[in-house]
Image 1 (cartoon, rainbow, N blue to C red):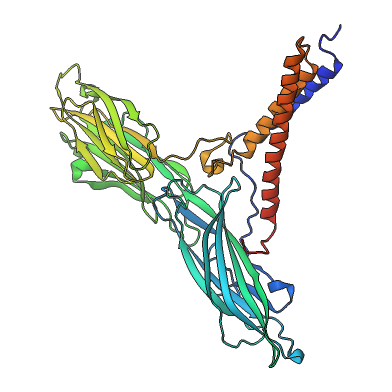
Image 2: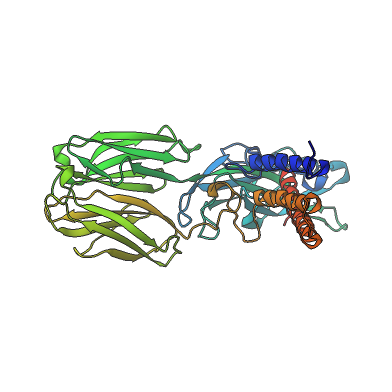
Length: 490
């Protein structure tokens, strides 16, 4: 049987299919550049001369770690602080060469704190210079050089720090050789003497009821789900708690507070007569950690679910608002067809972690607007109440205010969302590389009569391949650099 496209084209198509499978495998799921993360403080010989070595002094250890923890937790909101990163530097004189009568002095100490996002973007968080220790120290005797801290906070106040971000602390010292008179001192400049790294976990957590709308009749079991990004603070061993309150019981806590031991799970509660009262049948679930209240979710209780009015959310505008913009929630509601009790008001609750904003609209309202005063994950709960005091059930949903840029790396925003407009994601470049090979192969081997079309396909394929290889090379260079200790001050 004759091959209509030729042996070479067949081989090339097989190669393209193979590369496509490889690209698909490489870009699946939540991938990121594998950063070199070393939580052990690296002691570095200053200037390579064997005179001064640096380290850390956290945890009452001398020498110890430069950073006080190997893992930290960032907030779920770019406007809220996470854990405190503390560093304490240390140094030791290793050889003063007594026969040459040369002393070594540290005139300045500098600490830089950088964070490296999973997509390879590096941001300078802090650069602090302090005066050196002028005291005399014996050879081999460690001493503290400086200290400082950073309360973890989004650098731009707009984007959540991604899960898997690496903190790098570098310690530098200004080394001067003090020679006997009349010889002048010899300035060896600023040299790195220590380095340490730690990992950042993003403290995003969420809870939701097992029904939408969330409406439970007396005797039914209400189920509240949770999902959290970590179980406990690695340093203080503090973690997450969940609890539920009942408005009809004067906001009494009816479930918990319960410490969470797993990343996902549920808590259940059987609704009782005490949880129902006209206009007050509300269960509110709360999720908190050691820093803040992280999420809430509302559910309504009712004596007879078949008598409930109805409410549907018809619009959220804008879908991804910026901080300071006006957000409009639109809905339609209707009385129960059995009772025909008119709608008395629609309740709208919203907040960042807690429902600290509430409004009850007029009976004929079909929308409500408010200003998104801060960035982060805004939770909204909406329910209609009729004149008999029965609720429709709450509609709970999340609005990401000042949302992160579009996801260009074919994975999870939390792992590979670019932080700058120039970083398009190595996965996208890999896809373009495969596409370039495809265009080149079609133009070069496919039986296309027009030589102009073939030339355009070949040229377009070559351009895509060249640009993709260049972009991927930049990623490789950044990755290789991350494997090497920084020997100069940026």
